[in-house]
Image (tube, rainbow, N blue to C red; front, side, top):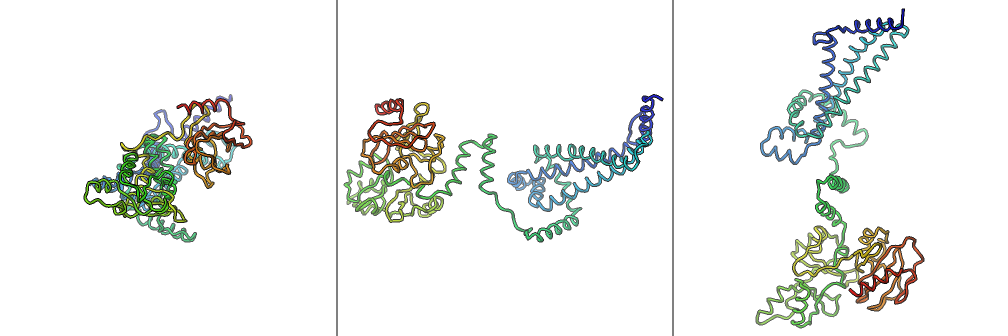
Length: 493
């Protein structure tokens, strides 16, 4: 007999043993009904898997608002979402039962059919027990595939995309099933809690709130997807940074404070008010560290119209003194409570370090706030050409490091470019002098010094950090001719 005849006999025997006819399967055919039952069990698994993801993915605030407006479906969904242990236990029981029944049903009904079909088809050279084992493995693999695709992955993807729609459809059924399985769920919860206590874990302990790191991660994801605007993202990040700041980080340094002497004549004070456009001024007596009060511009102007007029000392309001180390958020709340708009920041020796206003604190969150009296601020970091920047001496080193892409020392006693430059000198250069230094991978040419501090400098990056050198009012040993030309151009401007 030819091999093709052998194959034909095997195929015919297998088909007959499996109950297949020329008309195909029908619902009355035993195997057709068994396949339908198997499919239904997979769909039951799919229903509960989709419901689990849908309820977990719900927007609690949105559903709560809908429930408060009288939406009964929303109220049911909210009840499920607010009882995660009960809900998840019910879901897990149903998924486990459907999976267990599906596996048992498939093994009992299909493994024996495949075994009998192969044996009757002529595969007698392999022991029947071995064939049955292989059939069980084959059935398990096939069932796992269809269960994963149809009963897990696909329904979960659908639920992730349409969580509210799926939850609305399934919440009524889940609520009924939860009542039906309530004794089982109670037993499982009690057993689980007992196991947790064995590991010294309190099952009733509430989980931690959302952390700052998690919110920042959500901000990053929302920013990348476009759901959160860049300005919104920056503001939220500023709020977190604000909690880590102190008064010293936020204050206007004493060198930049516009202060009045208690004996200044009224005309001179009026001129200072006109030029500065400020609404409040710290007032000192013997020196700037001896603050005796704060002058409100409104009080001063009203006093000029009144008769008899008061002296400057009589118009002063009490100074609100705070230490450098007070947290910015604490200072903000205290100033709100005390209804003051200016705080005098005092160092550990009792001297004035600077001032902080409510506007300064708010600007740390929302960015710069300008009004019609604010002078136009110069750009702290301005790129003039490739590898050349004009920088303010008061620019923060962290900001400069980010802008230039160069690591700079951020944990030293200084915080600004001027402080970093002066840390290399043994004496302070005279006003109007210029000098150049190379440090931290930068060639820094100071082009303006005023009031014994760096006002402006030209900076370029060097490829290889040479030996640090400083030249005051002389020719630089490391600067190129290009930077000198730019310096002259800037001076002409």
